[in-house]
Image (tube, rainbow, N blue to C red; front, side, top):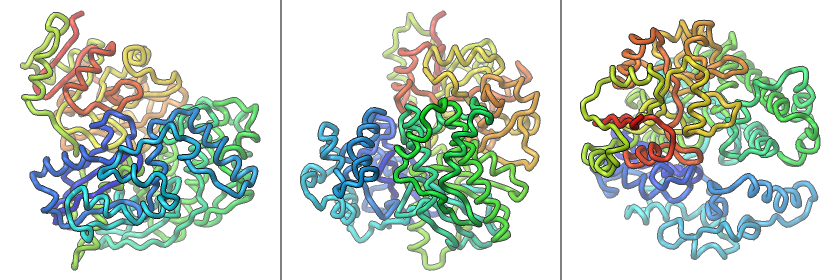
Amino acid sequence: MKILSFYLNMPSTVSLYIDGRIVSAVQEERFTRNKNDEIFPKSSIDYCLKEAGITALELDGVAIASNGGAFDDLLVRRSKWSTSDYLKEQKLIWSPYLVEKEERLRSLLEVFPDKVDDEMYPQDYFHNMKNDEGRIKKYNKDREKIVANYLGVNEAKVYRMDHHRCHSHYSYYASPFRNEKVLSFTIDGMGDGLNATIGIYDENGKYERVYETSEANIGRIYRYMTLHLGMKPNEHEFKVMGLAPYGKAKYGQEALDIFNETLYVDGIDFKWHEKPTDSYYYFKDKLEGIRFDNVAWGLQTWVENLLTTWVKNAIDKFGINKIILSGGVAMNIKAMGEIAKLPEVKDIFVGGSASDESMAISSGICLAEDMSENWNSKDIHPLDNLYLGPKATLEEEKKTIDDLDKSKYIITDTFSSKDIAQHLANGKVLARCADRMEFGQRSLGNRSLLADPKDLRVKETINTMIKNRDFWMPFAPIVMDKYVDKYLVNPKGLISKYMTIGFDTTKDGYEAMTAACHPADKSARPEMLSKELNPAMYEIMEEFEKLTRRGALLNTSFNLHGYPIVNTPKEAVCVLENSGLDGIILNNYLVLKVD
């Protein structure tokens, strides 16, 4: 069975399922080079089909994640918005409608005519529809037709999959849990009218939803508190999470009290003490005068308290202590770490990059389930890694290297993992663009910037040379599996392969990887690496261990500030030439700048 599956919003994403295995998945941003791009994913479609050596006519089905669509959001290209644009939306659309109670809700196209891009979809669809007053409802009916026409397949082959079912299936089929009951939690801003669900997978993988709500407005409030703090919603929520540990309970309690006046958990249900009129102005007025770090602390603490209470109560109610989580809120690694600490939780798994882009993967699995007469979840091959994107050929790399100014670079095609480790141990900062590109928002070694994590000063070096990250933001470590217990406080032996759970560090761990830990609370967001997961990256770390007696490397995404993670050798070289990076590691070449 061959199924091509889509997420058609921000960021647009495509995946291909063949006979029980996810064979590819990629975001369109990696081809267009526009971060979080929501444009119709032509290049991603082409890649997935070409990688598998098939045509669209060979597909048995096509899946689209989510029943609803967002025509106007796509047309104004939110991915390209600035913080000022989000403030304008609040001032001219949501304040009049929600706060001042005007009857008419102004449209995005009316307020942002300069943002309209009607060339983004095939068949001139958006151009022909932008002036249609019924465009939003019509688009919701037309998405199957748009996709079918582009692929050249019968529209009857195209199906939509429920948003939160997709979220749940993603973490379940990416998890190591099989043949046992699993409790599933999904929580996000909103999808198909809901923002939180609880479900149960039985021993055979059959899923039953046992709770759903549209009242769990955690994701939406966190989004607009990001805006309140002067950062970009839908992109910089992780910066708020990183800022929170700098706040102090003594000074942040006032902010926490304000959040506590709103949403709370009663059993497994989300309820309101006072329901805000909106998710921005209500809090903006109340939080005025409270310092930024303490607002972040209050917000993060409120979220952690809500989620841990919700999960604890659900485990108590349903008697299942192995859990999975998905949805945009599950990207909050600090909250996931607090959930992991609960005595009620025996084991936890959070899928890598478990926000909306991951539904491109799971919507294909959902459709395969629906199309199967005798579905057996055990027939699905475990999604045991996220290296699902393109890999450069020797010819691509050679062409890129041939174009370099040889007076500025030392280029070798005979190098070893030991050579790489030696450069890292000597203090060089190298970036790796090798093997298949990882899926999702977090680099996992194949499109990563690497450095020795021992010396805190390397953070300033990296920020100066390439990343330009906010001063309070930490980097993260790759930790070899045999060092997990030595470096991380992990009494339950949890596995976090994709940087999805925050851990406290041990004294040895913090000393060994200071530059890859959070400066305020000494926590870490590790990628726990095994040899089976990524043999080439593991070999580099083994050689680094021999030289330094440390089993971790600093890891951050390989990109220039504001751009997506690199995809091709050409993009890797572009970053090398436009940054202070010391060198890059390709499949067949090691390129170092001349000192």
